[in-house]
Length: 287
Image (tube, rainbow, N blue to C red):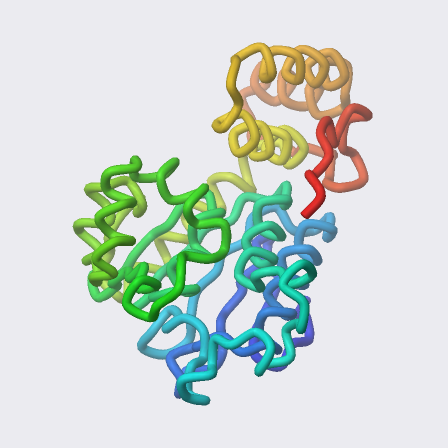
């Protein structure tokens, strides 16, 4: 199965959706059209019951060089680019991408095959695991362009690497190697270029073939939401209700039966159709 986009290539095979940024000659720099496509692909794969895991990578020598600034010094002017005339109504487009990924119940794996700068770096932050090629470099370059970090990244990045490292990377705007990114916790593992996608798919298959899609989807939302909660009681309320609702589900029957029979499970549940009644347990704040 394939989704139809102009600047993305998205295919689904064996319950794994592969999303490829597809402007290789421009180092996959993000245009306004790509913003809409990225928002759509995270929303569409979340709604697709055949998708259990999403892998995101770039075509060519770069993952993503960030927003397309080839138009010159006005390239980040929201009014000039037709993104809005009123500051009260304007919403950062990178943030819309990040929030679409954050809302998803499907695990998202980033496979960074080269440079990831600006929006190319911040769009990785709502992903669950990031694997990197040895040639990958990450740049939170916003202060060097005279703007602040976008895509909700001042919320996401400190949760991944700590506030001191996040501050250093964002204040200096320097490029960070794959090794340094791994040591800081942004990157899960570093691979030779030819081994990057096979490693990403091995991780995706481990999730897709062995676990309940419904359970994983609920765990994903719990991890992201409660990682920023002020008290563990917030998690206790939700995990109590979810386990009550899921305890008699067909997935639990299959999970226990397959364990006792020493065979691979075949979980029948799918998202979004089989989400527990209490999901979603929270509402997104107004902008």
